[in-house]
Length: 85
Image (cartoon, rainbow, N blue to C red; front, top):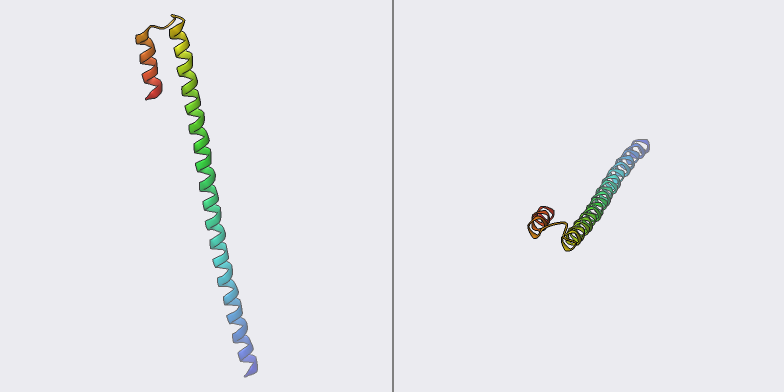
């Protein structure tokens, strides 16, 4: 009788530990997904900042070409529209 109770307690303990590990693994996976999403958002933010800088740089270059008389006002406006669209 005592042996049966010990076996049942052992099974309950194993099942409890198994469920705890599954829960822990799910939490770890959730944290990893959140970390990856955060990294993705940070990477996209950096890429967008780089694009903004390059657009700004291009506009500055176009303005200099306009000021130097290399581009006409119409050409400048067309290029500016392309950059900002």
